[in-house]
Length: 319
Image 1 (tube, rainbow, N blue to C red):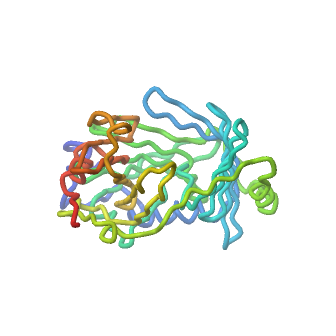
Image 2: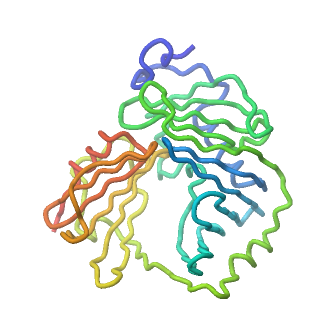
């Protein structure tokens, strides 16, 4: 059917035409993206990454101009997060603390097509698989396969009528499942009331409300640059978190290829807080930490470790 089946699963697709899909990769992704913006739904969601598993319940509604979403954890510490567009508040009932912040997505499914220019077709191919039933709904199934070794692949289930993503797997080398997120039940066109979510979002009585101070900036303004770009990844945001408790400010520089993202965290070196250099893996999320002159750098993202090394080797101080 495809070169994934004829040759190796990863890195096999350069220069190969992808003919096993009724839609182009951009058509599939745009359909899924718009479906998430235009439907009201309720359902429990399960996330598994390696041996770890967590569950939450989602309420989502959109009136055309505003999106609202409530996420309530069902495992681990109780948390309720409510988002209205990019405004997010998270309630911790045990500590009676609430955090407010700006965030584009709650991370339930990746925010597709994040990059300024859509380069996804240059780095991924698409293959359509037989339809399957997920959370009580028939779903189209596609695989987005990387054309190089700098990114993972994805298997995505999208509800047939709407295109809403109901399940997604992140695939490592040879197609093994690294991480999975899926609805176990899904009520589409659910009676989710935006006015009720707005009231819940504004009701902070009895909570200490914390507002982490983030300042939008540019890497150049903070004295950093990449000597060499990592293929496919574009800079999408850069923020500085103002210091807390006498600490120096830290910078987060975010890159995306439209599907995967990488964050570079840079802060002044603190021997009391920063331990040994090293790397870690949790499901599809890899991290790499090391000293960089008088700064501490942590690269983290849903990408293979060699990709993080490319970022770490390329970043440099310019002042």
